[in-house]
Length: 393
Image (cartoon, rainbow, N blue to C red; front, side, top):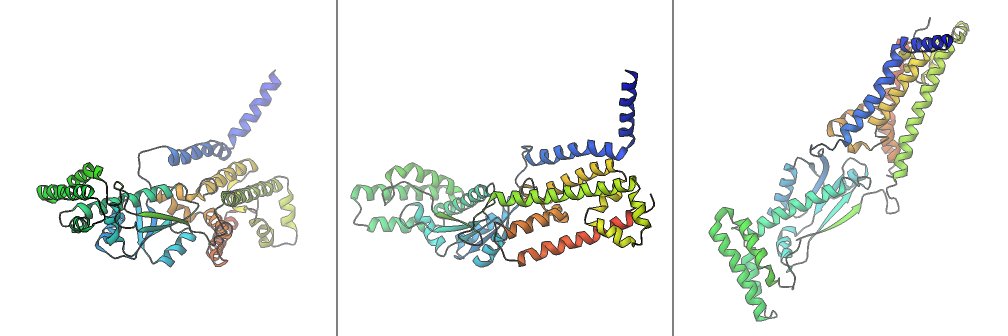
């Protein structure tokens, strides 16, 4: 029993004597828990600013107001672009969605609410990987359009109701009873507008809702004054989003890092066994010796000092890199500040580049920037590894 206790004590003393290894084994689970807790903690914070583009082909007073209110929405980051530019940015993953307000939108939207005009169609091109963002963008678009169309229709300065009253009065095809009901409805709204002044829009809308039992000229009740055509923005009609492609990119990067971590620990094991000194004594330059190991993440070996500490440090570094790079969960889920910070992580560029080459179906030019950025990281990390490596230990 004494021998058992002595052996157990020896192993514990060796383990806790390596402070770096102990710190890594404690820090890794804490950091992982904190990372996912911050993403999925269910807090009341508003969603991050979602980058979208609005193309206004109408340039009416109504469409300008819709763009302005969407631009003021804290949940959106709205940019102006023509249809081709906006579509290209959505395909590349720079924008989450791009909406196009068609010509004639301002003239037809209000009448479409009463069913006396065809609904204008808003085209919504969206990144097919943004399944969580699309409903939010769709809902915000509908909210801002409905608010502005309602104000346009029921505002005191709106000529729409007067024009529609005249059209109904002159429409001989409507039954007399139906025509009288509709005229009474428009007169009721006009009285509410006159009585309420600047604040009449909500009251007029309520009066219209109460009078909607009279039905609209086409026989139906009030309806949404526009239609939406949602289109996946991919490189071709035959190319669709494939979640397996993103998983392949993320897991591929993760296991490349793990392979490098294992080779780093192997380098320190060579030094512990005296093999490194033998190689150092051979007629080989330092650049050849260490250069052959830089591809094996010699930086972690330089920081870890021992195989045990190196493994802990490598695991922690790998987990942080794959988390921040978007390997486990797509980076668009991150808060806005973290999305920006992740651009300083090499794995983010690796995963974005692989996504561009797989399911996005983009050309080779889309991989040039990620490759250049990762080569820059390689130069920096390689220089740091050489500077930090202890040649004599």
